[in-house]
Image (cartoon, rainbow, N blue to C red; front, side, top):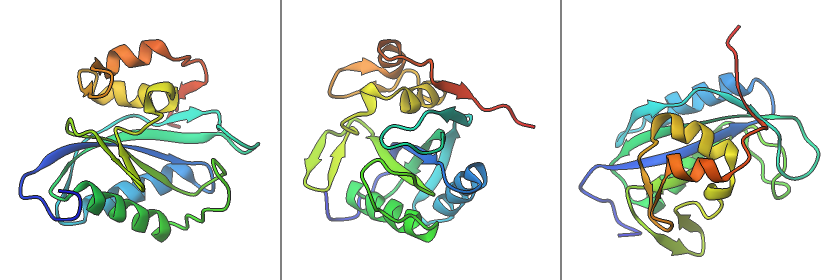
Length: 169
C-alpha cells in the first residue's frame, strides 16, 4: 500500500504550523493549495492558535489542524506535503527550527505505519498540545490507533497553557 495509489478515499488529519512571515496568510494559502490538488478534499479546519515554539529560541507559532479526504497513499500524501512546504519557502536548516510552513501527517484513518521516512500516527502528537488542541476542535472522537484513546482523551493528558486561540482582528 505504501508506494501505490489507493482506490478508496481515506480521512487524514494534518497539523499545520508557521512562525516566519505572515503565518496565517501562509497557512490559509497552503490549505488552499493542498485542496486544489486532485485527490484531496477539505473536510474540516480548526481555528488558528498561537503557541510557544519548541526547540531553539524563535518566534511563537501559528498552528491549526485540518482533516482531509484523500485518495492517495500515505507516501504520496507525504510527498505532496513536502512539495507544498518547499513551494512556500520551507528550508530545513536545524531540527525544530523556525519555518515558513510545517505540514505533518498526524493520522491516516486508523493506519499504523513505521517506515524510515514516515510514521503514522505522528510519533509525538500525543505529547504536543499545539497539535491536540486544534485537533480536538475538529476530531474529538477520532481514535489514535496506537493508544486506543480518542483525541479528547489525549488532550487531557498534556499541558495546554501555552496554546492560545488567535483572536481575529
